[in-house]
Amino acid sequence: MVYGIETTHSKPPPVVLFGYDSSPFTNKVRLVLRIKKLPFSYVAVPSMMPRPLLLKTFGVSYRKIPILAIGREIYCDTSLIIEALEHYFPSSSSSSSSSSSSYGYGTIYPPVSIFSSSPSSPTSTWDYRPLARGFASFWTDKPLFRTTTGLIPHTVWESAFGTDRTQLIGHRLDPEKLKLKVPQNLGTFDLHLSLLEPIFSGKSGSGCGWVFPTCGPSLADISLYYQIKWGADIAAGKGIYNLTGSGTPDTDTDIMKPVWNEERYPGLWRWFHAFEEYIGGLPDLEVVVREGDEAWNEDLREKELWEEERMLVPAAVGPHGSLDKERGLVAGAMVSVVPDDTGRDNPMVGRLVAIGVEEVVIEPEKEGEVNVRVHFPRLGFVVKVVEGEKAKF
Image 1 (cartoon, rainbow, N blue to C red):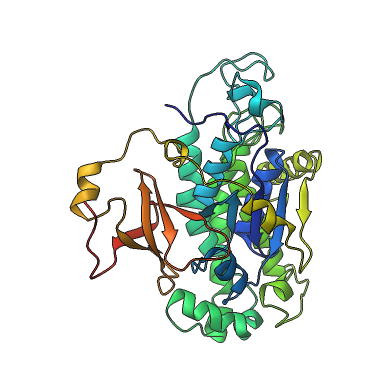
Image 2: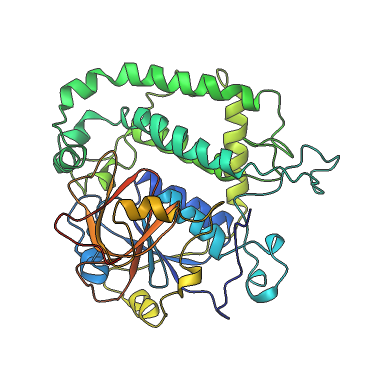
């Protein structure tokens, strides 16, 4: 299975991350970028709609955060963002050529060491990547995330943020009812930790001390860490000032302590702090863009759109053309792309440029200041031809 290619550019395209500080998914991508040792610019956007910067600059109406630009290619949803970063910025160990490896990128898919007598000399060729992606997409990013959001202080839902998320979710959020559900959600969080603890029990935190028996933390470790970290912080009220757009002050009430502690979960606790120590030892290459500074915008304008053969992140198999054609999903068709869970009232509409088994690429219907293409994963999204449009066969 082919997962990555070297970039053909002598200089890597600029990477720009759009998010807000209390967004758990923004911080997940930040962790990936740090492990990959990849320089990037960080542009803060509001936690709530509207986000005029994204609409004005790129014509992007999709409302979820984060969004990542690699040159003039715009990536939505952390699952695809992460795979694009790993593919277009391969680690030095995953490629023999020098055009990208000279930059010394890290990887979120380090080799396993379970079949080697020395963790520094892995010999296994076991490809755990599909399991790591599934662990993230179907556990930490969904049921675990739903649990941690249930620990958010009720004052958050009384602010304008609560109104905004009502539109996102599609039904009214009752602050008092959500407050009464916190003990139940804390119990569910305890259940998740109980299911996870056996992975780390009896491990020293070195060598094979990660979620998978790898030589370093993988996507699975990143995905678990960011959720536990965010859940503990948000339950205490840390970051809610940023989350609500200054709508309610931060607090520091550790309601998780009865559940999340070293005595109850020694393996997880040891792993959690080993991961923090690992991250702390890596260079921080993030450049925070000051409000009004648009140098990042100029950098993107100078880049060319990618040629067709490298537009899609490689998958195990090619697109299923006949199935897509039956639905009118062919190049040139006007399509809408929406998440299959929340945020369905903010579709991204555009002309279909490319479609693969895992990814879809469109040119936005509403042009922004920078001519871009927008990439979405197909997993977790609904792609369909806009009613009344005739596909160009």
